[in-house]
Image 1 (cartoon, rainbow, N blue to C red):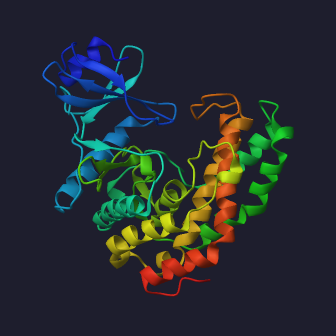
Image 2 (cartoon, helix red, strand yellow; image 1 turned 120 degrees about the horizontal axis):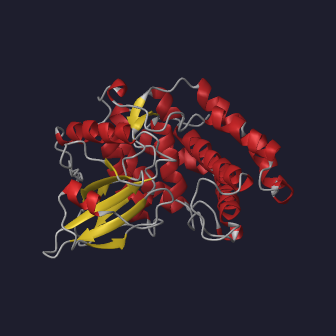
Image 3 (cartoon, one colour; image 1 turned 30 degrees about the vertical axis):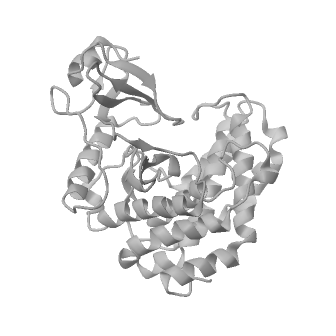
Length: 355
């Protein structure tokens, strides 16, 4: 919990009532409510995962100013600058804190419940990314160096397999072999020569806020991962989180598959908002983003399981391997439905995306 120093830095009184907010795997987040009813989101940034909070806050300010200049149909959460204007503080125990505006009358979901929800979410992410298309990637800093450098992550994964720190390799050999068989997708992405873009890097549906009255998506939050990257990875993350039949925590993999109506809803929302700024290579390879990110995420869950669960928050000892197997099932489902999915993309992109 925040100390009095944190409250004083952001100008909060100590009668601020705090309650846990959200279900993120990395940072600790609270909703603060003052005696007068004013609300704020207070976060303790995980500096093990995010060792450069000053870069996060730099990027936040750059992106906020750029998007505000566009007058987009997005709600953009303001930062609390703090007494020194930096917007973040290290407390006495070395914890890093920041505060952002709470967007009232909104809600979030863990998975898309209907195609319209996926469509609204896709439109918000597309609008967000299209709004950043003319922002020079050199303007933002690497908050997480190598975040989607999958070739490097794959080498770390192979090291985790060899070291087998937690003694779990024998129970996950099938999953390890699967990653090794499919890892060529990482080299394929590398060889595409994709344009460098300013992207969100974590546009899962849990980071999309919906209006409680209209149920339309109105905001994309959690900007910690914003940095230079690829539109394909953001599209892949949307497919990963917005189109499955169940969330990544579902242990029964027989239930896990890509829902084609949800995928079409996502594409119907995303593509029209961003089509005009996509390059030909991006249009032709959008679906590769799904293979890329889902396999990368499976590999990350699996590697963390082999390392003894050092990175992701877990609710029980097998949580990371459950997540990895879930992502494996989703990947396999997309392989099975690839032709149909490419046809959907081709229709909305108005080109032939089939390889």
